[in-house]
Image (cartoon, rainbow, N blue to C red; front, side, top):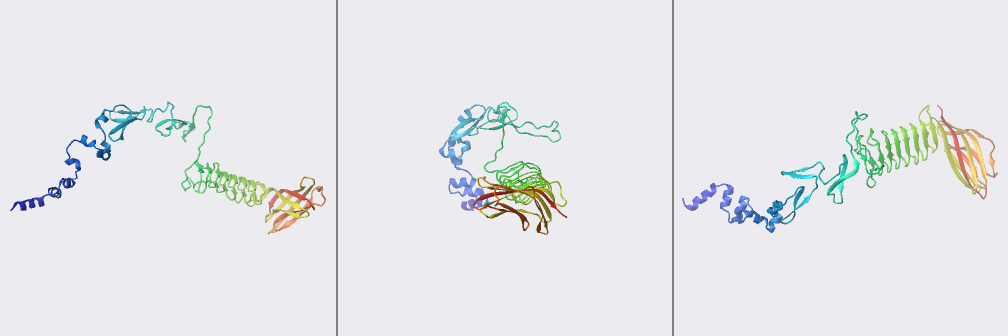
Length: 417
């Protein structure tokens, strides 16, 4: 067998790596086959190589003069590469120690001196936040003694150098403030409205939150405020509609009422500027009502008072209407006053009026004059009647004069069986 054949056989019998090295055309190809870098075929030491410009960027973790790095001394320092072939150090603070190859924090904490007061919350000092310092907030240890033995208590307390310190938690922009994180479930509720304040922590539905802009729920449970700038407190009340309305108590409803309010239980306001108080009271014509109970549902038996207004110019008439509910008898003491512009003349009319609404048909049961009408100007007049389901007051003006009129009703709303 010739030499060429022998070499060919030996090459074939070698491993893949071996054949690649034996057949490599140059040193670079051999290094590639072995997975080696250029240092494998270079003369010199590792130290010499690490000082080259190319290595300064390629091998940064080992870059620099290792002898100079080893010569650096000091405690509480961290060393870092500040430039090519250059090492520097930074002091973290007296709270950091480096002993026997172990980095540890002393009792003072990492980041410099933090004072000697126990339980104070730490905060960053300076715009760079390089060190820590005490704040004027304290978190004392959990309170476990009576009366907090069954339900332990934690607190966040203000400190400071003055006798009295006010505190605030300030949302950013139009963010809301709430005592729970919204989670879309009954546990945390839906998202709150812009600039809303929700102090309620008990609900059976995710929608029972202060979702209106600037709305407020002042604790309680199962309350819902969807109107802007609305308010609720108590249990199970709902405030919706035009806005700036409120409910305090139990299971009250304010709907469609701008500036409306309820203070009581199971009461309702359905119109602007109305107010209801007590138990089963209903305001649906902007009146103020109060109820103690009812034979059958909302507004069955209640006190009612309201104010109406109108104006006349010349010998024209103006009307002031008040709705009478179907299935109810309304009986009122009504006082109507007219005043000429400038106050030069006044008229006053006092009436006792009773109307009933049977199946939508309203009739006047009683219309009596109480006392004697007072009139500075005899040309003015008052007529009491009905218009549809409304009790109507019609006033007559005087030629060449402008008058303002006001009617005040106080009486009873009584539902019949």
